[in-house]
Length: 267
Image (cartoon, rainbow, N blue to C red):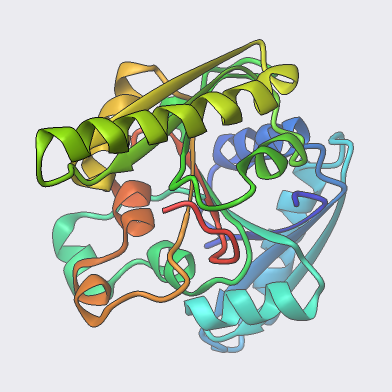
C-alpha cells in the first residue's frame, strides 16, 4: 500500500516536518515518493520547482526513490487526480492545524482528500509520534464486516501492540444486548487470533456510543501512535453535512491516522 506515495506540499513546510513524515514512510517500507505541489498557476513555476528540488535533496539519504511534480489547481481533486495518473497507491499529508475561522471560510484540503480519495490516506501528526523506529501501539477500528486480518498483516505495519476496537449500537433490551455483545466479542477474539503472529500483543475492546468519540477516547487511553479506520461505501446526506467518522477523527485526533478506502471500509 505504501510502495508508491504522493506527498502533497504547500512549500511552507519546515525541514523537520518533511523529514518526520519521511521517517514514517521508511517505517512503512515506501519505495517511491512523489513530492507534489498544486498551485494557482500564477507563473511561478521555476520557484515552485526549485523549492520542490530543495525538499528532494533533503530526502536523498532515505531508502526510497524521490521525484517531484507540480500542477495548477490547488484543491483536493487535483491532488487525487495526480495520485491516480502517476500510479500512486496512497496519499500522505503532514497535518497543518488551521484556526477555526480559517477552517470555516477556506475549508481543509486534507479533509477534502480524506472525504473524496479512493486511495488510502495517511495523515501524520507529530504530537502522536513516539520518535522510535517502530510504532508502539496501533488502534484499529472495525465493524467486523470485512477481512480485517489481511488488511492488518499485509501493509508493512510494525507495532508493539494492536488494539482492536469495535464501536456498536446498544440493543433495545438487556437480553438482546447480551447476545449482541457476545457475538461481537467472539468475532473480536477470532480476529485477535488471526493477528497474533504480526504483533507482539493484541488487545480487544468492545464499546457502544458515537464512533468518532469512542475511537478518540480509546486511542488516548491506550496511548496509540496511530489510528486505522475506513470510510462508508456510501454516506447519507445527513452524514455528508455533519462529516464522516473518518473526517472527524482525522481532524480531532492527536495521533496519526490511516484512512482506508470504502472497499472493505472499517467505519
